[in-house]
Length: 361
Image (cartoon, rainbow, N blue to C red; front, side):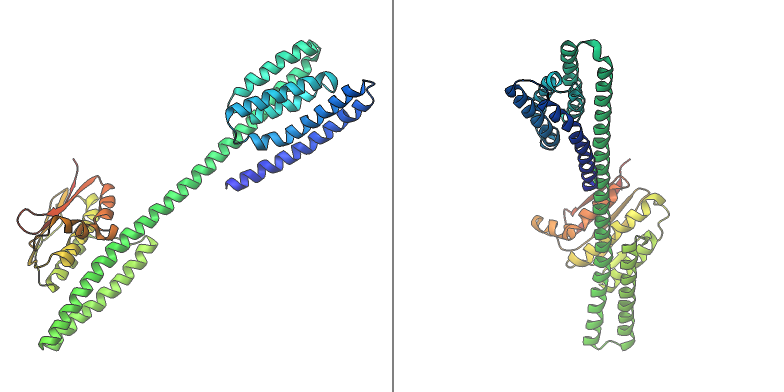
């Protein structure tokens, strides 16, 4: 987007410089037939050349220079235009005014152009009132164009930033959702596959093994469907369904699930976020709670709590358990921020681990 603006500015300045060259040719030609001494003619020609080169080069050089350089060059260029107005053409001021309006930052060009107008009135008298009106009009017009270009540039940059932030936000959403889908599904698949293997090794009836393997197949298919829905942004999460799935996953791991029978007490606006919190909490129990035999889930209208009775962990091991590879509880915290909920996770004083989500009043 910025490149497009720069190309437009460059094209416009080339056109302006072309017209300026046509304006300068008569000034140069008239110097050789003016009848002045040769050294005066040489100075006038040199001044016109410097004046022309400055008009073309200064906007490019001054665009990113300091304010002191911009003001200094503008004053010097206006002084040169004043000299040329007395020996070449009073209309040299028109292009100088336009240039100052472009290269001088902010509204400082009013000071520079205003001072030049005073000098012009003293040197050329008030017979050039029409010229003064033209100069003011040109300066205001050029400054308005520059302001419009600056505003357009800032708007395009802001739009690019908004687009980049939207892309980053969408990537973060997909990363969090994929972590939730794959983390929970693969953990459950691993637990059930391990259970089926142990059944085969212990000679358990084939029908029970087949039941577990069918669950593995079903969960794998569901995970694939969830991934597709996640990428397309169409996946919906139900707290009631998560309770059923979490209870089944814990049962397969040999962990007793003490869950509420319904989710009616939870505010509807919080249920989706609580579903993700439940999934993350149960996944952590399955992955990290060595020796856990019981998992307890409690629900309120604006809070959820997941507890287990697994072996206590040293403090140094807790971050690796709750971090989830950068997308576990950290990603859950970002998700819960959307409903103004606070996340607490850590080991219990005696034994086990607790995850609690509560919406601030």
